[in-house]
Length: 338
Ligand SMILES: [Zn+2]
Image 1 (cartoon, helix red, strand yellow):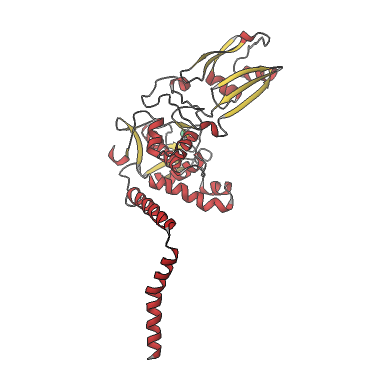
Image 2 (image 1 turned 120 degrees about the horizontal axis):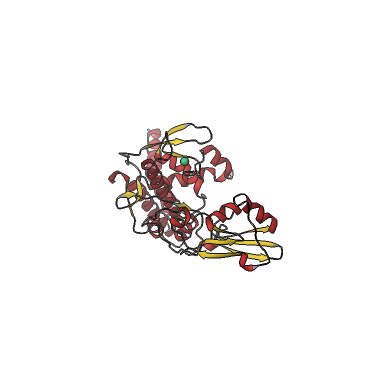
């Protein structure tokens, strides 16, 4: 009989009293705050994640450039690898969510506008969009951050499931780059051809805080000539004449459109590529025997700036606000509705 009472008491203690004691001892304002935040997070996740299923674009054919292998992969699994290749994991979650939506949009645009014969998209950043295997990605992170970084990126992709950027109910050609130097560029100034109404020049504050904002390339006269020669064999510059090496035209965003290099007028885009500059937003400074190129920003400058997205997120903007800042007149919609 005594034993039964003891069991009964233990049962009551474990089931009712113990949890009550534990809960009470933790009860403070901080916990209330955390709980509210958790509820918000859970709410957000349940709104975006669980039963979402793609009625189209659920899997994509990914071409691995090096091996030539084409892999069929669920779109959001693919995007986790893309986001982890394209953006540092320590960026703000709203910036990572922005990158996830933009990369998803870019992918679907590529499915609709195929560049490769047997695949929707490839894993080469200079051709389509960067991609890194989970194994390689984890190996590049510090061991204690591997699990949390991967989870953070996975959550950002899952919380945006199905979301894409549209203009006129069509997925946009969602260009993005690293750092705009404060002002984005229009596509016509980079690739020629036509412009898109949603890719306008916009200004973003806070990008100057990132390492990608400032860079310079310093070359001797001979080095400069050698590099230009790879494209213009007869190049000849009179370095003693200030008029022989100068910028002659800027684009509306303040990047170099054309510069005079002796007997050739060369576009900013071509100079960037020939000299390995991080962007076409540069100044030319002659310093004794050296020619210095002082560069602002990193990348072509069209569309979303990744550092700009992180700066905006840290200023309190969410992913929708960031996307609408960089892409003019767009809407964020569910891919099943297009
Ligand atoms: Zn490609």
